[in-house]
Length: 305
Ligand code: ADP
Ligand code: MG
Image (cartoon, rainbow, N blue to C red; front, top):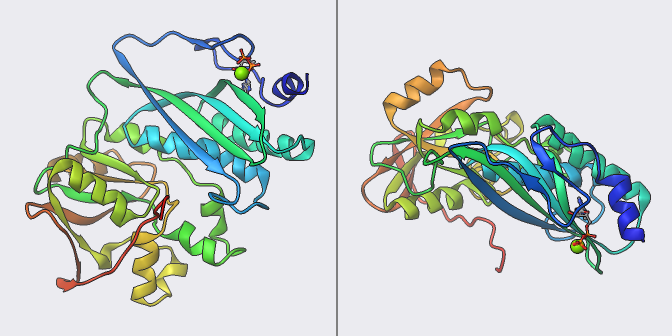
């Protein structure tokens, strides 16, 4: 009985008119828009591993949605709905109230409906969100499309969340707790970018996925990395570690031809875009600082390290 009252109390708000059937039956029902592909992804947050145990539950709710919308954005998809699989050690109404509010705040900001899920008891607080979105058939932006000569770009600033994790209480903690998925930029880049990924495990590692998938290399110009003022005050070694190997940025990294880059800037995206490098033929990732080669020892986030 407790399970149903939790669902009804916290996770059964009205959905958008484009949902045929949401929470309450054995499954939800959606009608796919004509000529669109379903884009679908899931991400799990485990307490103590992906966020400190005492993290504000409102932020946990927000972030569990945001990280998934970021994956949809990285395909160029328009987000539509989510499912929530929640494993709770105990029923804590204050926690559930704040968590569900954070989750719905993120959903509302991006026009997304919660349409179903599962609720279970387990010793570890675990949150899995599955997100669904739509993209015109054949228009999704893959990791595999980077071309030699493409410009490498990134949205916003990078390294903020990794910096905040080491400096809890700093104003940049907002970037760690409440990441902003770049949904609008993602859809703008559909038809413009050749390849795209969202930066969740560190820029160097995530760009590495594009390079491997596209069978190309890259040169990054370290002086161009977009850094918040707090990171600009650090020495280069620290700046570059946070910006290139820190995780949890949820910015978009994409490669784009110079012509399409000019078109993108004309469209005045809602978030700052910085050109940080170029796609090259030799299949390595190299770093330069004002034209001089720099050797860096970096590691992105390793789940099974
Ligand atoms: P079943 O036993 O058929 O799997 P459940 O009892 O698990 O059904 O869920 C009942 C309804 O509540 C379903 O529509 C399911 O999608 C929804 N639901 C369960 N848990 C959640 C949750 N945490 N958030 C949103 N919807 C949920
Ligand atoms: Mg069930």
